[in-house]
Image 1: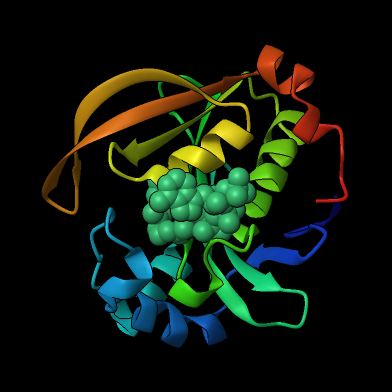
Image 2 (image 1 turned 135 degrees about the vertical axis):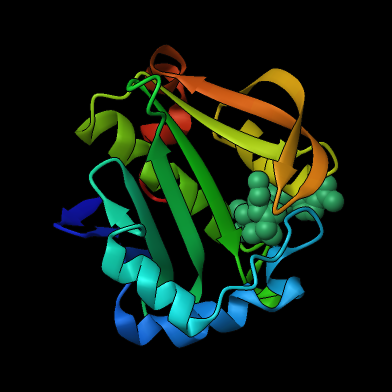
Length: 187
Ligand SMILES: CC(C)(COP(=O)(O)OP(=O)(O)OC[C@H]1O[C@@H](n2cnc3c(N)ncnc32)[C@H](O)[C@@H]1OP(=O)(O)O)[C@@H](O)C(=O)NCCC(=O)NCCS
């Protein structure tokens, strides 16, 4: 993993800070339900709303960052976002979306999550990483299993006013340190 300021390079991907020139694409994704898959609700953000968010620092703050995920040839494939829980500074939460359906199940989602997790544990003083997922989202649950997460809790949650039943998964620093996937950087 190589980190240059606001970029994280993985084997096949670049996770980078969002710029104004990305907002048209992000608005398109935000209004296209297929980019959310079956278990996330579209946010329906416009370019103007995203511009306000970008200018206000909502997408890139000290404890909260949204990255655009690109292939190394510059093709944008999705977004990944983390935030540090305000009430619990040792806990980070990640949310990920591979937007183009044809780009899913190629390992990009696992790879983006893996390298963001490495960043959080190795560069920030994080004690655990958490992720929420719909109980029916078997693909994401498979990713979380590959990444060493353990099921912590089943709970109802609201996603864009849609009530869902979700699982909360957790990866503690101890599990992170002992998970082989984080020792090998060929994938
Ligand atoms: C969930 C998501 C991030 C996963 O990223 P991805 O790049 O598609 O996933 P990967 O290719 O890294 O891994 C998918 C794994 O699920 C497996 N899988 C595919 N279909 C499956 C199914 N129906 N049931 C169980 N596992 C399945 C794949 O075989 C692969 O596992 P493997 O490497 O052991 O073969 C991506 O599909 C996505 O963005 N979906 C829409 C939005 C979303 O649901 N985001 C997550 C919200 S919590």
